[in-house]
Length: 346
Image 1 (cartoon, rainbow, N blue to C red):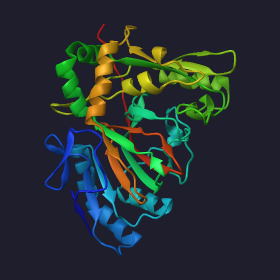
Image 2 (image 1 turned 180 degrees about the horizontal axis):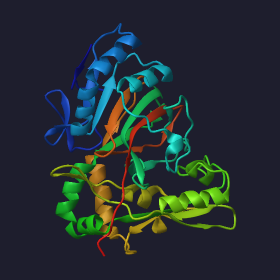
Image 3 (image 1 turned 90 degrees about the vertical axis):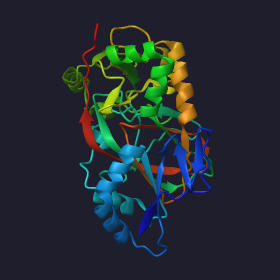
Image 4 (image 1 turned 30 degrees about the vertical axis):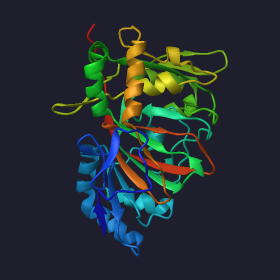
């Protein structure tokens, strides 16, 4: 039914570093993202589900090697069909209710939820999903129900390539990231705040109803915490890695450094206090600035069309969200919960 790596002429890269070569978008020597275009105009959802089931190992392998696979032209007209395609990949679901993510999201099915409820004018900066928590999903699967009138692209960035570039430009910073790790701090509101990209309440985030239950959960997670006068909860994570070895010889800049520095700001949160090395030292601001520049240079904007869906290896590729106008509906599903911990070198 479908075939791979067909160029999408209407999709223009945002940076000159990504150029079309022989009908494919390439980033250096790699196709990024890999595009799978359905070449059948009368394919039924059941056909697509069967094909995904047959190709699941291949699709996941391609998502890991390329960072992301964009599937376009498939008969995905509603969330139920998307849910079936996710199911055909035969991955263990990572339910959002079990995560420690900061964002407010609304479930559409048991394993499919809205990508983010932040207002359209809020830009969400590059991040690996839940890299700031001890639990993160290996796989992200996104689907576009409704494309924005303007804007609303989902930029993606290969963090393995970002790591290699940073290692050359900022070797001391990368060494600190690898040997010291990171700690993240944020303030959770007492009730969901839909005006913030990180407005999920502490009750929802921790899956609890009371302060006592919250504190018990935080002890298990090895978080530090304090309550504020207005009923909010300030938490700091245990030491977490800043770099992940995805495969022998392949490392990824797996963290929330860019998002924390650029976007963790609302009436409760201040980016200047959101992140530090696990030994208490501050991150080198110039190197963080260089990481932001390189990520922008490597970025490719996924300009959504209704029905698109994308498989992302969360260990390899970061993602973000452009601000937009109009009615934009992007849903997501997570799969294969992974855990991470770190013992800093002091």
